[in-house]
Amino acid sequence: MTATQPAQRDWQALEERYYQHTFARLPVTFERGEGVRLYSASGDVYLDLVAGIAVNVLGHCHPAVVEAIREQAGKLIHISNLYINERQVELAEELYNLSGMRSFFSNSGAEANEGAIKLARKYGRLHRNGAYEIISMDRSFHGRTLATTSATGQKKYQDTWLPLADGFKQVPFNDLDALKAAVTDKTAGILIEAVQGEGGIHPVTPDYWQGLRAFCDANDLVLIADEVQAGVGRTGKFFSWENFGAKPDIITMAKGLAGGVPIGAMLAAPRVDIFEPGDHGTTFGGNPIACAAAVATIRTIMGQGLLAQVIETGAYLQGKLKELQAKYPFITDVRGLGLMQAFDLASETAPQIAKIAFDHKVLITNAGTKTIRLIPPLIVTKADIDEAAGMLDNALATVEG
Image (cartoon, rainbow, N blue to C red; front, top):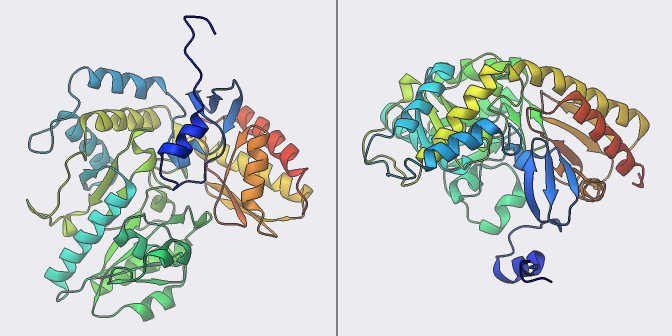
């Protein structure tokens, strides 16, 4: 080692020593990213079909996002929400033009859903004789706070934290009769992902979605669309619910909204836009840097025609997965919408397959033990997909069905 070379640190050992053991991490340290590729400290190159769990929608270090962050950081980093924030207003304007709804900004999807739950409860108190209950779906995922864990329809995320928060229950997905049967005079709203993400990429049916909207209208219920993973263009529409027609009352967003910078958003239609000063708040939410990055992300997606590209490349990716299904009998189903694709497995080998793919330098992730999920950046090309399909083919060839 020369005098000019810093000592190499063992990041894996240091992480084990200093960081709480909340993640089962893969043994790699990434130093930089560009587009759909990540570069490790050891010099390996990985094709990224995870995108920071649907966060890096424009890929890694997109020039428009980098420039927006750099410019804003040189002007104003934080001022709190005691004052008007120009970037925050710009972002709210962009989202209003896409949704017709006003915004509240937070730092994550769980916080956005917390805000939506509080807003629905206030509506229930004012308009449904104190109703407070939120009905969500089996297999859903809405966050890791106590309230959003209680709203999540997966026991593996709930059992450790019993007793859960009061006022939440789940019903089967895409089953309107079951939903109707569960509604009582305590029900304030319905919380649903139009395309379930962590639950394994399951879209609603158009009939269900439109029936749900009509039922909420008839019973004065608040319909909350969780767009945290499926929003920001991932399905070929800016909001995934647009694929199914009817408009919700509240929309929650996060993940890809700022192209990699933490942000959450809760949008409210006029009839439920009833928060008043003091009802809700945040110190960091709507931070100038996060909002600047989000404005750049939205303008890039909408200005460069990425929604149409997502439809085309998503169909192409699904076609490649179906080719793999035809080759490997242990792949039992392929489904998805846009660049939100998944395939099911005959046995509980999804974590194993994700690790094998990692060893072959392609990043994928599992949703449970029997489903593989692919959520690449929206900028992924057909050439990238061809390369990824070849790498996946090589990985799957080593799997014992």
